[in-house]
Length: 172
Image (cartoon, rainbow, N blue to C red; front, side):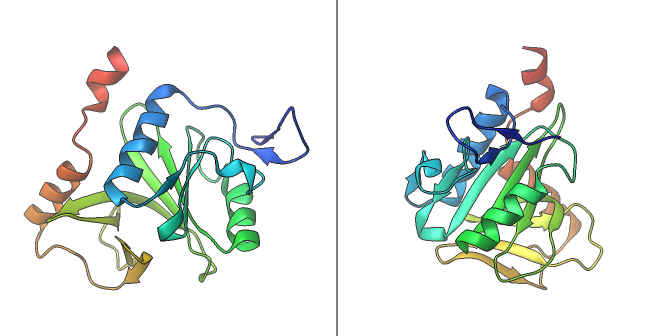
């Protein structure tokens, strides 16, 4: 079972993650902006290791597990607390996001961070007609329209959103 019990209670939580994954969590939270609660587990059981962007009604969690591991816990928190969940997944070479909106019914998976002109978006890994998600001061907003006009702008925004070189960091 991918979810482990906390030693101090009966709530389930995602397994421990590496420091590199936690750094990505903080970098993404910083790019989205707003007030951050670094210990949301005090009021949200199962949110250990995550951070809450209070003004955005967004809980950001992280894991190195493969999909769909972690979805059950995150979806339970999403529905019970009325929060949107951003589940950050980081492996040796890429950072992707799974998004559970409290107003929606299905997971948005394999999304990537995209940034330009001070805006932060989550875009589908492949342009296949999936919806786009803008991180705004009101929380996560769904739209059918991409934040870029062409493939070059798409690639520039992807590079801007994730400026770190994962391959160099993995070797370190």
